[in-house]
Image (cartoon, rainbow over all chains, first blue to last red; front, side, top):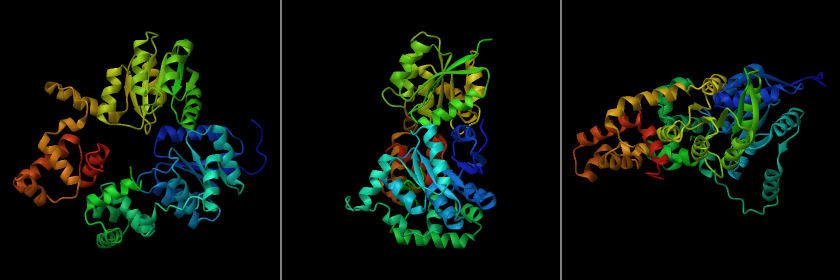
Length: 221
Length: 214
């Protein structure tokens, strides 16, 4: 294997399916310019690892438990100017691409891409660029030129604060106020206040409605 | 001993290629082909004669269950290991009925162990899957052909399920169904026991998945 040309790109892999994560690791480790500094099975662990180890690139799945990929991306990008996020997901819907970009991702790859695409994307993004395939680029161009009537599907969600969206996901995952309080190190009272705020902002009045909303918005599966 | 010849089937290319590299780290395993759809998979089995086919369920053209059935009935001797994100009863049952020798969830890490066990003539199931199978085995006395675990619920229970998912209180449900609140609570308890659900959120997600409510 040839020697790396310059300092290796340090990468964190985030996916909730162990086998997928291990496979991605294998692909990335085959390149001498790339170094895997860690793996994470959910969004919360991902943010934690980035805080501790400061990777150059995070390869991030979207559908993750605890904290989904969009939220994790938003948090990471905000806290770490030098860490770049590449979304790698099975979802090809425009809504996800837009949300990813708004959250600060530098690239978006669908899982039917090839291993060479992943390697290329990580290296381009690691060196400061962006990476989108032809379909996504076309979509972005259409948006930019205003040709699409600019449908904004995630209006409701964007009315919530980061914290509220985080709590919404945990509610939809079936956690009690007590459990949410523990996970987020808040008091149960605070969680209850947030819950009421969420319901007020979304004009929903029952847990069941919140769960259905969360599913529709793909906050949870 | 000759190497275990493996065919990989998954329509997420990057997942398939990652899996390939993972398996190739083992000297006993040889990847003899890969594809993203069920129709090609069945054809390739004839051509490359693998010992083992690692099969995703959600693939195009011909789905994983059907492809498994065709491969097992094809007589080539190839054994099928299902590798999927789906851990529901129906997928597992249908896979086994179609002749799969193993069922592995993508969030497990035992692919090498599973591949070798099945190639040597045994079976392999993720621990989570084994638990479901054992529970089903114990239920064998009731011996019903359950095609959908919604069928595990009585009609009244399905009604209550829908109303819970629509956000109605126990009292409201009792009113709508002309029964006591106690009865509704009993139904709710049975629903949760039968489907292994633990709270309202899980009930709602189940109902949405089964399209009982939107």
